[in-house]
Structure formats: C-alpha cells, structure tokens
Image (cartoon, rainbow, N blue to C red; front, side, top):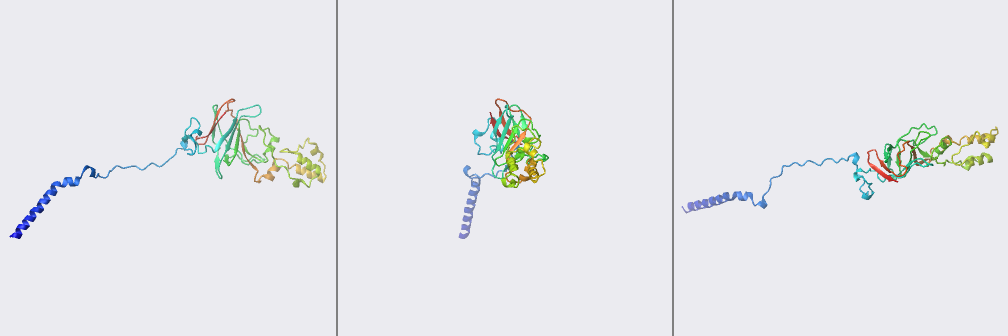
Amino acid sequence: MANFIKIIFFLIIVAGIGIYFLSQSPKIFQGSPQEKVSAPSQTFVSPAPTSYTSPSLSPAPQAISDYLIPSGFSRGQLSPYFEKINISASYAYSHFNPSEIKLSSNLSDNEKVNITGWQIKTNNGEIIIPQAINVYEPSGLFPQQDIVLSGNNYVNIYLSVNPINKNFRLNNCIGYLQNDYVFSPSLPQNCPTPSRSEISYLSGQCQSYILSLWGCKVPDKDSDSFYVSIGGSSEEEVECRAFLDTIDQNGCFRKHRFDSDFLSNEWRLWIREHILDSQHDRVLLFDKQGLLVDEYTY
C-alpha cells in the first residue's frame, strides 16, 4: 500500500512539471526580442551585370592628371592614345609654306597605332587622315595603305595641292622626285652618294663629276657640258655614261631598298582643305571611336 501511494505521489509531481512547461512554452520558443531569430529572407539578388565599356566613352589611363584634360572634355571622353599621339605643331598658310598640321607618336616598343580614319577638327572645318604609300617605288604604282605608326614617328599634313596625288612615307631615295615635280616644302635632299670604292674604276674626271652631284641631283643629259662631252665610244666614256645613267630614283631604289635605314620615320600627306584660321585656332585630334587624342591651340 505504501508503494502504491509513492507511485501516485510521483505521477502527480510529473504531471505538475508537465503542466508548468506547457504553460511557459510560448515564451521559451519565442525568446526575448534580442534573441529572436528571423526566418531566412527570400529576396533574390540579381548578379552584377557584365562590365561593358562603350566605344565612345572608353576610359583614359587613370595616371592622367585632371589638369591635363582639355577644357570641355571629361576623362571618359579621352582616347586610350591620349598623350601617345600628339599634335606637335600647327601653322596657318604663309607666303613660303602651306598650312600644316604636325603629328608625332610616342609609343613603347612593339606598340603600333593605325591612324588612318582619325579625324582632325578645327573651328573652321574637319579632315580625315587618309592612307599613304609605305614604301614608295619609282613606278609610283605601289598601293596606298593605312598609316601605322610606331616608336617616334612623325606625320606632316599639308593643307595644299599634292603634285603627284599620292601620300607617302619618306625614304632615302624619294628626294629624286623633286627633280620632276615641285613639292612645297621641298623633299629632303639626302639621297645616298656613291662611295669612292664604288666608282674607283672610273676616270678621275668622271669621279669628280659624280661627286659634284650633291643631294638628289641627276645628270642633265641634254645640257650638261660634261655629260655631252662623254658621248664618244671610248671605254672610259662608255663606263662613265653607264654609271651616270644609274644616278636616279630607280638606281637608288635598286641599290638601297633593303638598307636598314632606308625608310624614314616621317610621313607626308596632302589634303586640299583649308581648315586652319590664319590667326588663332583650336585643333582637336579624334580617334576612330570619336575619342579625344590631343588638343593644340595657337
């Protein structure tokens, strides 16, 4: 009987504890406001869009200081070639020379920039940089192609008439063209002169005459007294005439085309557009994407 009473008493205690916990369960499971755990948010966050730079707003190198950015332009309007291709000078027409715009490149090793199709704008108009002949052959039939600059190259753009209607890169033989055409300004007269060893087999008089042909001059076969005087059939005269006949652009090109220094780092272009103000102007250079490459004022 005593055991039965103990069991009844134990069950009453257990039931009381159960009732207590049931009455306190909302507080236990809810917890205090600071301890309340929020359900995971179901908000969907879309992935960041793929980065895309508009060709018209290609960022310029961050190294460019703000004060170097021309007035009226933002950093985002600068070309990647800003400070790499420069307008080094610009001259309006004078009595001695045509209007001219000079460009120069400052590129690192193995870096090349195609400038054909770039635009030059002034307060009076605009021009597009054309193609040119890279290696000008005497025949003049070599096709024009895009102008690709590297290292420290120069481009002289003359706003005038081109006597041969061709733009070209200078080379060591191109000065001979000045004998047949009037270029303004004149072409460089730095054609290679024959070495003494090359002409040592000729008569002394013939050698002296050859050495007197400075620059890119050619013998005047019609009126030059010496050339007329060697019209005979002696071996000396025949040899002298034969050598003199090689002194022209054709002969120079055949001998020196593959010299390591044959090509100049200067290009010359002619565009018959008068876009420069005779007194003051602002010259802007833009790449093919319409981004600013450089500014020049005078």
